[in-house]
Image 1 (tube, rainbow, N blue to C red):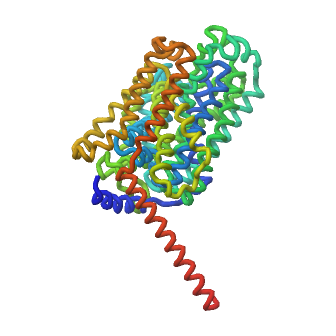
Image 2 (cartoon, helix red, strand yellow):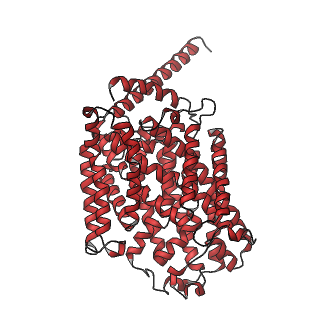
Image 3 (tube, rainbow, N blue to C red):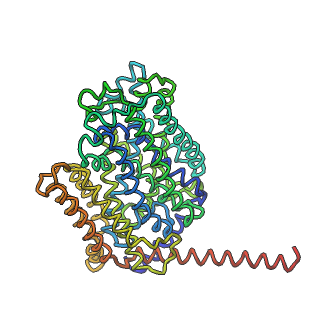
Length: 564
């Protein structure tokens, strides 16, 4: 992209972003983050984590929060630097150009857009436990039936309908839903703890770690824990609508993770103590098979009122999250279009409502496609979780790359410890990707490759001299995915591999790989045209803000001089 292209795109982007309404404060953004995190994960995550790790599932939630928080700190700096819609799909493009930027954006979009049908699936799966004959035919124990898919499709349309009109409607609706979503899980944990708590469940049936420590780490990766905490990025994707992104974004991101950690741990503790001993007598924790885990336990201990509340919340919590992700994914599509990898129509924002409606429609179509292929919450949770981890790895690399490339850019959030936090975040992300187990890691990495033809369509027509630096700067990410697929295939049998890497050493090898590619990624970053463009936009915005502030000061002085 030459200078002319940069200036031309600059005016286009400034025009489209001026249609966004900066109406979201810290409370609204925290509600966005918390509402994204507390979705279907709390309805199914406790059972799925327990079936993998037993009582040690409690630690899986803590580990997951630590991973999410570490990675979130890198993105908080980036989000405050570049307060634009769809922020999560932009940072890799700013630091490394089109190839790495596209791969990161593709992984992030896959991870987020697939959550939307996942939330609809969760609602219908809970509905299948209703005491009606027709409800029993919505879910066959593994996936939704045809009727179940139709009802889930209706929910998808509902999510998108709520996002079609205005961001203010979204904010008001979401804040109200989020309050309900926080109250009900808290009430559920307390009620189950009071109704029945069998401390023997923590020591019997194989002890605290019945399936070994590897199962605890795998639970972090695939049981819905990464799926849940992934919601921290929703405030970042709504940065273009934040009133004061420098202050509100980091507060919203960190607060939403910490609050949700407390809620999820309480639910996990309550679930583990409430499971009837008879349900563990055959197969232990691995033999759990609830259609509607928390509601089924509520009914088992005579809490029928709680079961009814949970059936209602099975619509409200996932619907709230589905609504949020419908909003944030449309902003991501807008960001991908501005990166140059989608038709211009998907960058259009309705000037009256501030909604990127073409992007919203595209995501609706893709959500239908995911629903048709992945009809069970568990299968969607696995895909979402691994794609999420792949999208995470650009944050730690991009934040330190941009400190080197653009040291003078304003950073409302700048942690002194970031040179330590960033490589640690890269190691955490690499470990979670490995813990997801082969062949799931290979399947999702293959899904990443499916998106490359779209990149090729837009990029390979460019002159070699223009394309070459993008390829060189993005080589680290392509190599990283290939190496991680190979290590997962050859890794320990506890993680689905062929056992060529000794137990214990495999974890160390993955950590070293993470550090190696972190160093490669940071060193290969370059001042590409997209970064130059972003710097120009930020400079122009700062100048306009300063001029407006100066005019306001002049008006005040004139009024004071006139005695007004």
